[in-house]
Each structure stands twice: as structure tokens, then as C-alpha cells.
Amino acid sequence: MTVRTFTFQQPRWRPFGRLLGDTFGTLAASAVWVLVLRWLLDRLLVQQLPPAEQGNLIMLAALALGGAVVALLWWELLRRWSWQLLPTRRALSLRGMLELTPSEFEAYVAQRLFARQGYHVVNTRDTKDGGIDILLTDSKGQRAVVQCKRYRNTVGEEVVRDLYGTMIHSDAAHGFLVATSPISAAARKWAGDKPITLIDGATLEKLARTQSRRLR
Image (tube, rainbow, N blue to C red; front, side, top):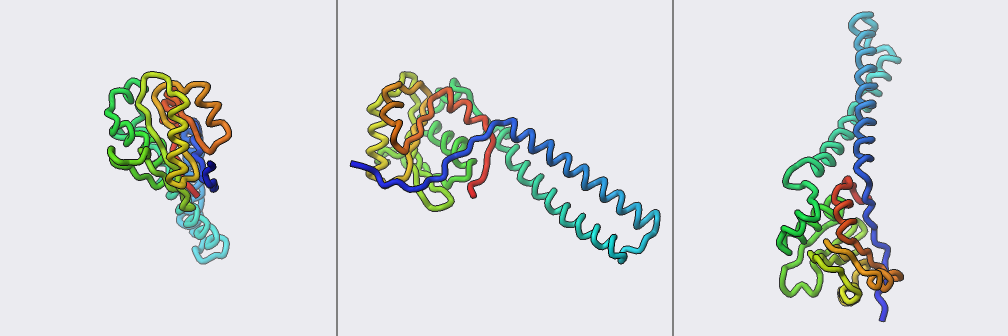
């Protein structure tokens, strides 16, 4: 028995340092824009060169375009920083995750790991969910299923087998197993040649601190 496979857009969890680098880059671009603005104002107000001069018109158009680009960069940065700084969206430690109820943990994984990566996310009901805790849809309409395990003990092969069965039943392109505990070597070996991503507790804690992105 095999599952139909499609191309599912995989998350691109990027390190937090990338966000810092993008912030410094936007600051530099903003500084250049301000310097050019001051230079042009000096030409127009101090040197009293005519605004209708071709060179000045070109610079004014370039400044307007550059200002729009810088504004968009800052808007995107504010969105990305909000995921890092707002208390209601903060990344939790493993201890903090284990203190959540199962439903709260599923909601945390849905928002912290997947929604901020650009997926359309649906949290299924706690009962009669068919083994699907979270249903993901990428920008191309392909679906993936997520199972969340707020465990303290090692996750075994049987859990991965159940996830694979759920994928087949729901005709999903990919499956994610997200756990707070370690995942056994047998489970990893069994999932090795299948469209399944296994995220153990240590990896989950790390990914929760990565920056967000948008699907293209």
C-alpha cells in the first residue's frame, strides 16, 4: 500500500541570526535613503536648483520608489519581530510545552511552527479527528497532516506507522510528527524512505525560535 505523493512546500526554518542580519540591512538601506534625501533637499532648497530639471526629477522619482521599498521592508520586519517579541507568541522551552494541555500544545505547534511559516492551518477537534491534530495547506493547495505528541517517553515506531496510515487515509502529500520527547532509532529508520518529517523535543525547541517566512 502506497500513498499518492505530491510536491508539498517544505518549511524553511531559518535561524534567528538571519532576522538580525535583515534588520541591519534595512537600517543601512534606510540610512542611504535619508542621506540621498538630504542631498536632494540641499540642491533644491539651499542651492535653489529648479525642481523641474531632468536630473532632479529623476532623483525625486528614485527617492519615491526607494521610500516605498524601505517602508515595505520595515513593515515585513515588524511582522517578523512581532513573532519573536510578543508575549502571547513567545517561544516556549520544553518544560513550558509540557505544562500545556494537549489542546494547548497542538495550538502552540500549529501557530508557532506552521502558521508563521505561511501555511493555512486548521486545528481539528479533539475528538473524532481521524488521527489528524493539524491540517496544513500550502500555497499550491497541497495538504499535509500533523500529529502532536506531548510525551515524556520516547516515541516508537508504531506512532510513525499510525501517522503514515493517516496520510494514506486522508490522501495527504506529507506528514509531520511533532513530539516533546526523543524519537526512537527504529521510528526514524521506518520513516526514512517516506514523505514524513520527524521533529523531536530538542528540534522542536530550536525550531520554535527560528524566524518566520511567507510561502511563495
